[in-house]
Image 1 (cartoon, rainbow, N blue to C red):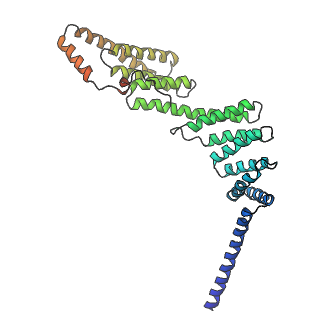
Image 2: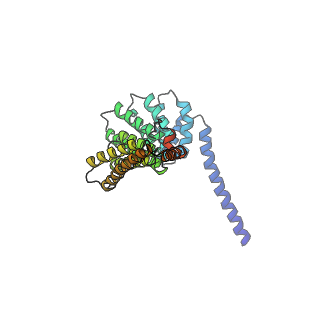
Image 3: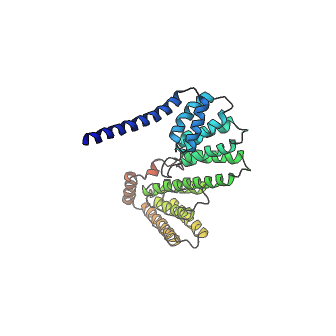
Length: 309
């Protein structure tokens, strides 16, 4: 009895293996054939069944054979979408872009131009990472808008650009904040100002303008004694601008406090420098302190511009 069951099991297993082998060999046989029409028909069937990996194998082979022929337009259209469906946005955007350029007068050119830009959008990384693809996506979407200003997709393209600019805005703010964190106060002032210039409507505008006041104050406080008055004065100017622009800000109290500290810093520095004129020992002490004082990172490259990364 046991021997009979074992034979039946082995027979069934053999049948399954043979069936599976025949299915595989059928696809492989089709791939190796020169019947391009049948191969293309099967590729479309696989695509419509959402068997994109197998469809891609056939489209990839056919792309070399159909190049320059009348049927190539539809082939390359599906070829691009197959890569897109598989999540290979780099290959997909390359195929969509080539399609849009090679078939500019065709009915699918607009769609493929948009999809090429959209693939760049999908490849845009987190704001904390390099934003090269984000900038390329913005350029590609703007090019689409310029080429097809009356397209129904213009509204969507504009929304995508806003989303991408929001990511650049996040990165710009984070980079400026980093300078403040690492105590590079002068660079922080420059970076916050750059960010406000590049993103004047930033949701962080109020906070950044306050942080400019704070960074400038800390820069002045940690400066050489002979440069403090000028730098405290600039902190006061920033605080006045902030108070005028944001009279109801939650940061106003702290900004006013920094302004008062800056005014006190100027008065204290004036008194110190006046005493230096009549006190040689104090003058030597200050000179030695300023000589040995550890420079802030921004003091080492005072004239270098801070990039708005």
